[in-house]
Image (cartoon, rainbow, N blue to C red; front, side):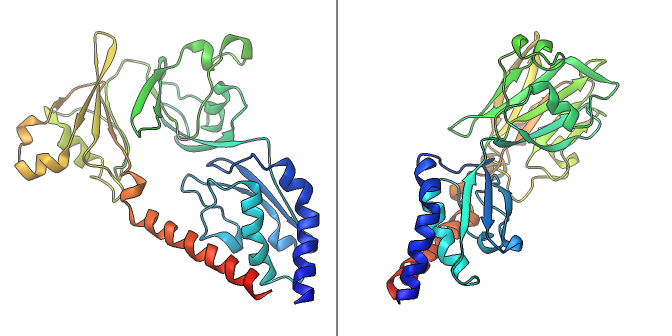
Length: 302
């Protein structure tokens, strides 16, 4: 018992300055955590908090950490390390360089997810995505951003925001989870379908097709799709208009005549089902409870 108390005291002494310095820092998606365990390089490294709130640290792969302060994170890590390392001495800090995740679609050479520092010029995003393709339309660079209510707004970037790497020409900054779409140089000759479909991308119009036709062409809804809030952005008079379709009601009433005919330049977005409705959220809740009980029992036995 004495050795255990000594161990806890030693860890608290070592972590004291770090915890006091970082007490107000809260982990969130994109936070970069650096963990150093003395004499145990296999348990040391830098880890980014993912969008789902987890990190790839071996001892905490199934424990959500988003929303924790550094003090709480240290208290969670300490008993986990003690299971494998006798008298562990470790240091934890959050890097001031926050990593964000942005999805880039459309006319870039390497479309997909991009991880980048949050404090770099917005134009560098396209370098991470392989640069613009020859058919990129610099007047059609659109950012879809999710707000606190789970809805998406549209932001049209000006050329000064990304073509000239001069911080004085723009005050725009990407946020974690932004979706950036780069249009075609020769006008909007295709339909963009993205979000929770199995094959997101650009699709040419073959004939008069409605919204459901394009979702099927994009591989159908994925398992994480929110079919009650399918969004169509339509361009009319150089402005985008937003309409929402509830496929749950459409399927139930078989009211397929309500579906719009999709035209060139339309953007179809299928959002992710809210996290509180998913099995993963309840699994994470049970994991938090389990982790809390583990810490309580560990301290009680000392």
